[in-house]
Image (spheres, rainbow, N blue to C red):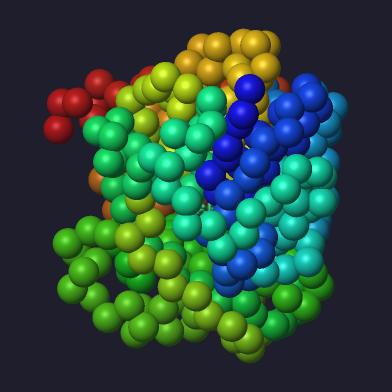
Length: 362
Ligand SMILES: Cc1cc2nc3c(=O)[nH]c(=O)nc-3n(C[C@H](O)[C@H](O)[C@H](O)COP(=O)(O)OP(=O)(O)OC[C@H]3O[C@@H](n4cnc5c(N)ncnc54)[C@H](O)[C@@H]3O)c2cc1C
């Protein structure tokens, strides 16, 4: 058996580590010069999105032998609407580095891979298919799946962000739900240490947003953040990702080709979380290759999560600022906190179930 993995990001590396545990040494092809060779940013693993798994870091270590070291756990979250604020307390997940940083998740995974990673690869999927018995497509986008008529593209998003210096509680990220900055968008601040954080404004590529001056909107958002955090923030580096595709493949496996990570549909339309599903799809593809399960079956729960997440994304797009002022204070109430953190009650699929008929009617 000869396995090629195209892409050394989260899903590709998780796949390589898992194959190696089962005695298969894949060839990994990465188009960049080294792992994580892109802008540094902060990302998070939110427990709320992966119930009944409440601790994703422990889950990957104990169940799959994949070791992730986040920068901090999330013990509190501040959520701001146009004129209200909620403080939610409890264990809610983790924050980690991505990109060109020594502690980025892709660097950590790279240290756990023993197989050769071929950097600056120009190998196409078609070439790999001719040479290898199995190809795992882990390129972080739906491009190949789309070319093969195997991808449903649902939306594209843009993310304007910066690394900022200031004073932060590293256990307390913040989020802003306020459409005054970008229509149907949101903002967040993820502290990566006591003095450094990642500030991001994420928004769908919507006709309403196309007409706006993004730099001017970003400036207004930064002013709001400084006001809410009662401190000036110093920007040290910028990034602007545009047209980031969110969608899902129709078939997770075609012949001996496996679509993993964002090529599968790891990136969830609601709030854009994709790390958890990216890692899991890489692991599941390896399990299938090793004869330990069927990839299509193993990924069914992730497909359901994607579909639920799409309902929530569409519902969120129909809310207005006045709705956020009503909803946000509920999140900080005792009811909100226990619903968000309950192990037995999975609030997001429940919400998607309730909202689905309403979304169809309008
Ligand atoms: C700004 C931003 C913020 C985000 N924040 C969060 C967050 O807070 N929480 C969360 O859960 N998710 C977040 N996500 C989503 C998450 O990062 C992705 O879902 C996840 O990284 C997808 O993993 P992947 O393996 O599919 O792709 P990646 O980890 O992106 O890896 C793809 C790899 O393939 C390589 N590659 C591409 N084309 C080729 C080719 N032709 N040949 C060889 N190699 C190739 C790339 O260079 C890259 O190394 C965020 C995404 C962005 C852009």
